[in-house]
Image (tube, rainbow, N blue to C red; front, side):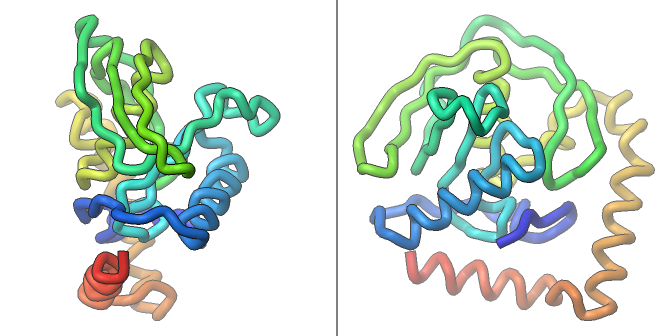
Length: 193
């Protein structure tokens, strides 16, 4: 398992609801947490590791020692956004090194299932709310670059072009499958879920 980088098709693929919790899913969640910590992230969504499922992992402190800050969410839904909009810098593990200001709601109420299949609800504000919104967006194929303001989009243009060039050169070398092949693999994984 590895984190895919923009413009990998998985990042734009709308993730499918999970209907069962099994050992494979638990294994994916553990691997995703390890990857998130290895790359110094605060959250990681399944599409970022080329899995088309509504699964995400987070640690609101970004510290593997603070397990109480860890959160695994299956089929998460933001049921309410409130508290006005706040602009702050965001990055993304699928866009290493690219940080831009993004406007997000200050507070969200989310509902999701944990790895035991128990439904839970959480109210999050400030940074945890930002992480929830960023990661749930990933499940819908929405990226933080879509949420940037005009100035942010203009200043990110060069970096995005560089990500695209690196990605396409890796495809030419055969290191990354053709986009059509990736889409086919995502559909096959969905059918198995």
